[in-house]
Image (cartoon, rainbow, N blue to C red; front, side, top):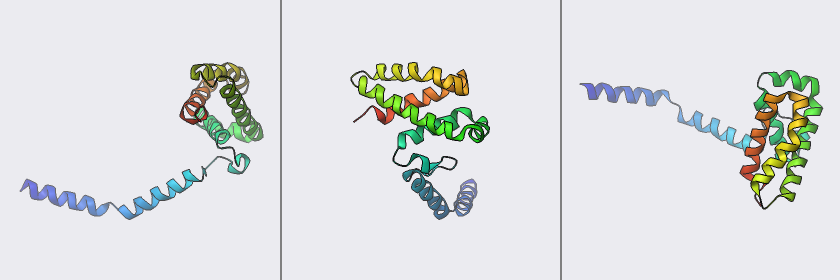
Length: 142
């Protein structure tokens, strides 16, 4: 009796789940990720600069709900800041390519004062944590 009810419940749950719709949704998401078209990120401003676009995204992650107000107030300045982070990271990688810890230290040391002035200490630390993760995942690697 119980196994029949369980089998029926499984069949009902399986019927309610639309695999094709889920596959289509994930395929669309994958296509957006591949083309780097992320809602809320100005993709035109970062054409050919995927890491700068990623650094811009760190502001959105670190600031959460406060990002919209800051973006409306300082949108172009945030884009410039993302490029400045990209330049600082590329310089640190070029100067310290043999020592990953020195790359991270150099980036944090140079960017913390700059970010602190723009977004405050706590948000700056969160942004730098994300920047370090981006560096670890690919910038410092050939």
